[in-house]
Length: 118
Image (cartoon, rainbow, N blue to C red; front, side, top):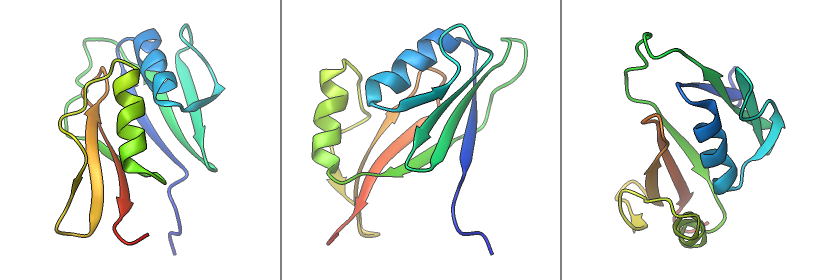
């Protein structure tokens, strides 16, 4: 039985830019850094990993990672203060979550959400 996600690994052509983006969101670096070929950020026992990929390799396909947060609106304000541009402001979805999306420098979509009524 699968109980949780341990890690998600995303490709990046520019590790320094990607590391700065995830650090600006408030992620805690566990390993690597701007000059590394592999960087890992720890989030409550799980990880978001970044791996450096050359520009010749296709990094296509939709990737969206959904992170639950305590306060979607506070996270949105934090994202704005970091100079990042979400797709839209927080909103309530018919499936029962409040959420917003922001795209990382490599085109991966990050969703910050919280179930309504939490």
